[in-house]
Image (cartoon, rainbow, N blue to C red; front, top):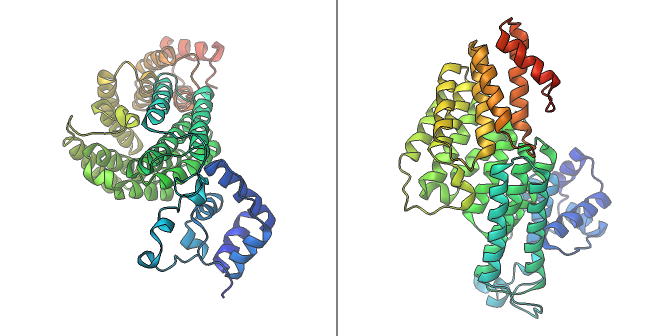
Length: 416
């Protein structure tokens, strides 16, 4: 047995002792499965001493979430495959470690089926639509977290077919991704990361390429918001690697688009424009016959224009950015209220950076009036604050500018 130095180093890096790690893993496993694992110091000690070289599935997921590293980077080594020698019943029960409720041995409780999955999906779609309208709302975030808990409770307390079980894990992951996105829009980054760590574990249990792609799409957004170019690039690489991105042009296009944005953080202009071109070409292959999940409905021609504008803006081409933001707003669906306000704010900032200060004020006013009063979209508010800073620095005496700055100073929604 060899001492697991990698695990010890990872614990030291975040200042976690054996007892603390056991407690935090218990909390994470409870989030994943709805049940207590009751891990002890002894279990952690066995990992550190090398007595256990490859923890159980749910323990590995919890370790990866708490220490933010893949299991293999924590010094664990997968066991050699021996499925041909194992009992078929044993092979069918790996999920039992995660939920205690696999339909294999001694399961009791109500049986769930497709009707339950559809009922939960309808609730999820209502949350998605509310997010599109309001954006960044703590109410939207909380409802998503509560729905994911209900789905997990159903999985934990009942039994069902493998197919339905995986559908429910996929749905729970998508719901937690929705909660994460609400937190991203509200710019509450740590809460967003917690939700995504939960979502990625659920996506793994679902074995759904689409759900895993969904999670990494939001990891890419979060990393970009935190100006972490390395993590953003890694997240977009993960997106491009999933089967759904390779087989469905819409997913492939969005992955290239996120990559283009990520590359701008490192000022890699040539690479960013190459990825932007790949995104646009891939979108040109999108067919109405292609199936896709509800959450990615937002990604249409207007969004391609809007995200393209973000790339041009970050590369300093404000005129091209203004043109693309205008195209996005011309084609944006009425239901995407938050996105309309956000793109108006970005259009205003592009105009301000170009020196079109009077036009920037008019556009910023439209953004403020578009934003739902109950919105918590701090991405939009931050962009409008950036507009204000540019206008203050210009020190223009134009009546439109002085009047707008005055209204902002006295308004209920402060941009200071």
